[in-house]
Length: 398
Image 1 (cartoon, rainbow, N blue to C red):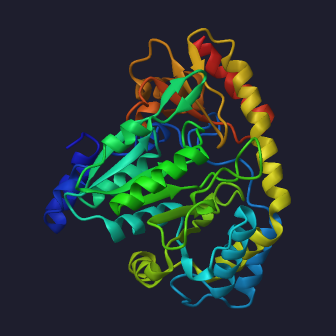
Image 2 (tube, rainbow, N blue to C red; image 1 turned 30 degrees about the vertical axis):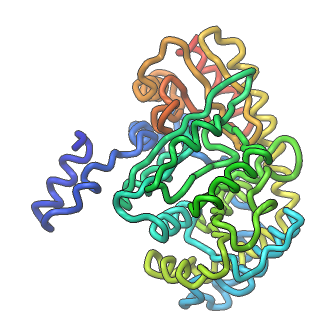
């Protein structure tokens, strides 16, 4: 048991009795380990979390306020209100040029809750999940929470790009594998799975009756085209495919905690029950605001992408002046995931950057296999803020 959890869990055990051993063994999130040093300190530029410094647009906020004024504060449909589910089905159908039926859509309390619900649906203790990494650590934690085994398959850098070795991914699968998990666009690398790779993965999983769970939360933060390639564009409605998505990134709604699941329609009711058992569903008055985001939010999404594009360019220009740094500019998402030559402890370096430079950056070790030796910086920020942050970072890494 690690040193941070020991005092917390020791106290809990004395007060309430034993807890599951697997829960006691869960590691604290390394990003939080860094942010605890200076969260809320105005002297520190916070680039450790995956969110923009833009607040949610006023027209979305106003829709939530109007719903409150109408008294929409009661329990509602566990799978989401009919208007929001229909809006999501229409949004995806238009975006991907393929009809997505409303009975395939379930609203969840954030993309993270969507992933946990799907793990609860599929996994038993002793099962395993093959996951492409580096990846957001909370997704990996859901596998451990279910008592299953995580099998990491690391992306490789080749010819100036991140690449997936499909042979290695498929070799990680055995008789106890229940799911292949792919986050594309990727947090933290910005890698995107290709259409050919999607077809190969889906065919592989069809043949073996195992699930694909596609985390497509960053689908709209892309620098060429309108959206990243989605498994929904090539899958049939009853294929073994789950897609998790969220309002957090493209619409600057991280604090709202609204996500959604697209799944075979036959599983809709049980997914809805699991959402109910977990959270009883998304707060009622937030759901009209989500409809408004889908209906009226395209100009803001375009603004967000351009803001991120400029942030990527600023950070890339500064990193290019550091001889110890190796950086592959991302195809999508809003992170700079860069390697620092000679750095063997990214957590220690991230803490040093907070303490000496006043900049909050996430340690690469937080993102699993292939992450150590890297740092992750969120560039979905104002240009002047990024310029100041990078000047400080260069004093430590230069």
